[in-house]
Length: 323
Image (cartoon, rainbow, N blue to C red):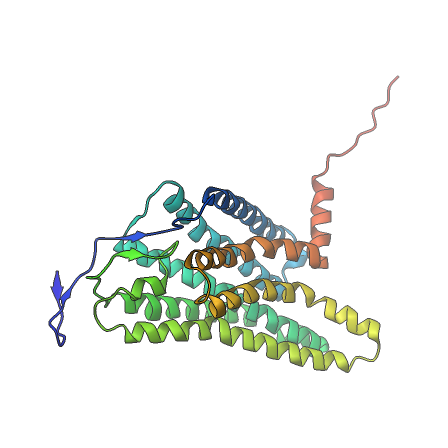
């Protein structure tokens, strides 16, 4: 044990393990775990397929598809970091997790969830440049600019979760309880049992959703206001619809990611804790599964690439001449 100076000379306790409560007292919860397995498998297959299509199709090497590739990569890592551990905790009763592993688990989950929102900002930037400046799009949206944006957001996500969220937890003493009332090493259920001052943790708990969700959503809404203004200047209705169709895939991703998680954060305190846990877990794991479906179905370039790959991989029919 270590000691730190405080008004009460409190003993600093850093536990060897935490206990993740998981899904407690929910009937037929095993069916939900089967559902999570299905989501995870579909997410891995779908996002891997999107990444491979972009890698092997040289026509999809534009800046936009660098952002799409990064989104698929982030989604793949996000569900891989979360779902297997949740299933291990719940199905095999491995509720104990070491102190360092818990903080590492939180770091990866929060970093990747943050990057999902930041990826949507990069794609929103691509759409606003394509609609507002179609003649100068190639010059304004280069590979260098997109890679710089993606690198900046990765560093921002790492700094927010590593320094602010996870870093502040290391100063807490856990002398009251080591039970985390959640399905993973969540920030709120971890800092609340802290024995010493949790003011900074409470502040970052309120600030992080604004930085991770609020600012990206505000930028996206503002960008679509600009896009709407630009579309209103197009003379024919047919051309307006054609231009807007290029945004439908991105808008679908935004709705799938932001609407459910915003609903949970707004009404999370008034619903049953178990309902909140299940709702939060669904809103976390569903977008990575649905994103590749949306891009394959709503993006013309990827649909054409899939058809071309199917044609290349189909068996060649050889006519056999008999004598």
